[in-house]
Image 1 (cartoon, rainbow, N blue to C red):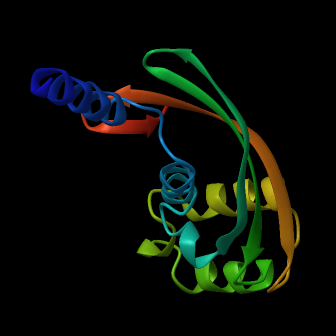
Image 2: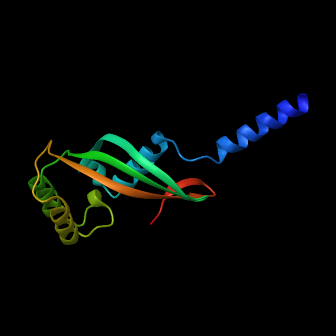
Length: 135
């Protein structure tokens, strides 16, 4: 009987370790992915929700998520920052002209507090170091 209990506990522990990522882990992965290269100074992520998901294979999980990006700076403030220090580290690997073009094409003109609602599919891969966003 003890053997059966130990085996049952062992199977449960192994299943928990190899399971799908929880909602909090998914939110952390999405947040970390979005707020890289200085963009965490530009906007924050709010109202995150995992709306659906399916396991494509043992190592691939596709998740539908929705969230709001809330701007912490206006587009004009970003332009002023970049003009004042075009080679500065505030926006990571992006060059200043390329960055401004990318920001404007993705978000248009925006003011502090403006929100953009996003809904997207996120592809997660199981790696040796846990779940990670693909690509």
